Image (cartoon, rainbow, N blue to C red; front, side, top):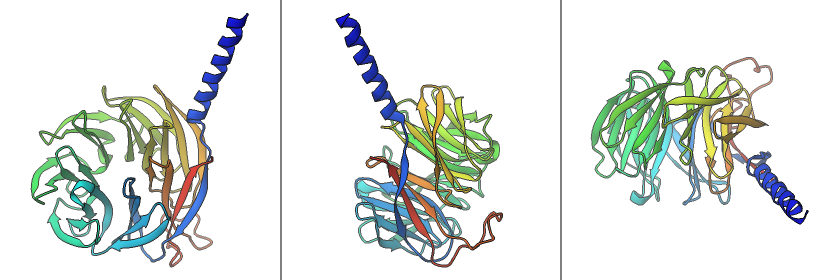
Length: 337
């Protein structure tokens, strides 16, 4: 009887722990006013430096994540899409889509040091620390440009066979994964040879933009235009699960501690789903803001950041209405404590 009672206590404790590991209760904790006009694209976090980088119009806005205030900006980045940081080199790399260039930035002064030519319309950008290389994923030339981060020299151009979107890396496996949007595939790139070594279908997903990664369980999460977030096992290249999402997805994120995958959608919601083996289960549909389609996560604090703006009344049905002047802002959501 005593043993049964002890077993019951242990079992209940395990169930309670399991519930706390994936229960999602994200709430709006802060709105950071940024202001200014123009569109936006990627956000990226440097957890160690407590910085959030936000692309906005022709510049990158820099926010201190500890004080949640704007502390500077990187200018002269025409057609900016994203920023990748190389902390050990004190360098940032900004993809300037309208210039077909990458801007090399001093992370301390936020000054542009030089520019490097890439393929046409560099969009997503990634720093690969193992080889100390920067990858730009170029929408109009359907390829990736690989740059030596120290010398600034282009070392390879990788044909992708279609328009690339976001990318993620498993450095231990020596692979970079990128959505090839126009082919509804994920391409796997070998970082040593700079060659595509596999192409995997994301069916039943279609036309993916955002991509997130779970390094421990070897999973990729792709946000697709047909209102699905698909989960792919990148050891086999097979889609093993999916979860419904809203219209207009453009970014994904993953919290490895909570095993939660996020998909931010321009319709005004962010889906939060729990990963459990080959199961992907929606645990929260977070109300955000119209147009809040891009996001990032700080894995150190578990906060997610979304770019948003206000829109005039009567523009609800428009795909890309003109924002209210000066209303650009960052929405900060965190799990309720």
